[in-house]
Image 1 (cartoon, protein in one colour):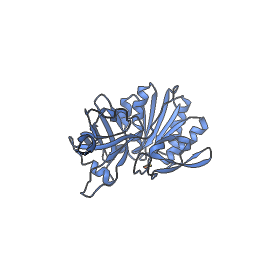
Image 2: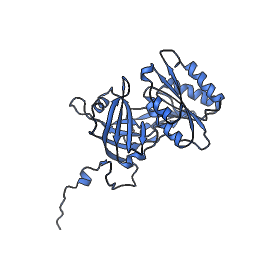
Image 3: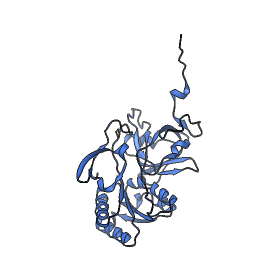
Image 4: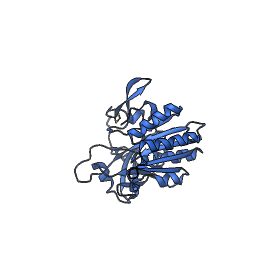
Length: 291
Ligand code: FES
């Protein structure tokens, strides 16, 4: 018997574009070719990329991430995909959005993409944020690009009828992140800055204590700052408020195989290692040891 092997498009390029028939609809994770809709600066440091993606990529939820195959900014190869948390999922438009700082080679290459280009993304990956029944109002506290990771909580909370107060910490007013997005979903935002010292831990603590007294803090969420994590852990313990933290970490495979992304956590006084990509990136706040 002779066998012939013919090239098959389905197997040589399995990444799905928007509108493609999905040969594996049961799979949660996939490789997708997003069409760049826009890739614009939102302030001096950050860009927002909007991608038209296949419907399966839109099944992502808040706190999950995609592994991005960034183009090279300089002709030399970019070896690894870059993990990036989802900023916004717009199911109606079929869009996925990422907010990023163009500072490394991968993100500088990403910053060069123009409308109409294709961008290879794999995901959604990891375990994201969860809301418990009975929570009426949550507090989100983040700094810098950590606020991009926390931003989809605004959408998740609004979809579940949960109120949000978002405390947005930044160096100066020009780099306050995600304010418009939080407010578009009905969240109350409080901006705290280094320039006027309102971002100091003592002031943020006062704001949090006020929200707890108003019964507006059924749960805490944070990302992007060890000192803010430590503050929320302390107040969480003091007032018995549960919390979740999204951890940032260098990754290689992104799906649990290489163990590059291990971090130390502390559970009931015992130190343990976990993979941020697969066991997280969202973890119980009280178990996190910080950045
Ligand atoms: Fe490979 Fe997490 S990046 S195990």
